[in-house]
Image: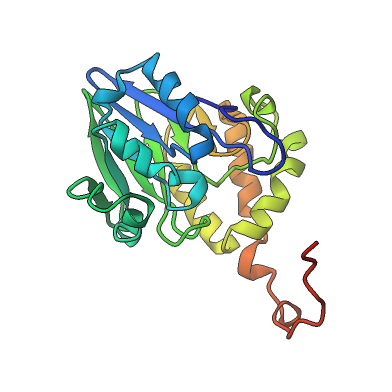
Length: 248
């Protein structure tokens, strides 16, 4: 897990990247933007030869997920694994031809992706927050990589600290989830699925990992009660604007 690969000066949100290795194959999860590319490439190289990288896994197509796609397509032989909704959008992030025969488009149902002697499971996580969105479950380590679910907007240094008691952590997550998640119905459908998994650690793309079965169970319970997205929308949000935009 890489948490602080570029200087945080308020211009970009903190982001985590993850490398999963099994034997002669490896997958890089949510490789991020160009700011992190050089440091991440060197970090990956200390653990696994970039020239043998098997997959780039993208939970969705936001810039903090795959803005660096062109450079990874140039520097490695990896194939991009992403929702079929974004399969024809991803090439816009690269030079012409870079993604030819190198994108694996995944249907809404998700699926099991072979990796070395094991596998990663792509779990449906649509509308949390992206229309075509997946979470990644590693059945060997029992880690669930949850993209923008479980996000806490904190520094890269703070993101290294495991959350084992959820209650004090909730204020750092609440605002993001109320705005970015589509609806409480979506959250409850997801927790119903997630509770069937053996999860020892839950790791978002921004912020701190949640560690331990009790903290994870408390997280699921918290999500079940979060009103968010369209639950909070009213007529007041859709009015002709009266204020000027500050361009100073």
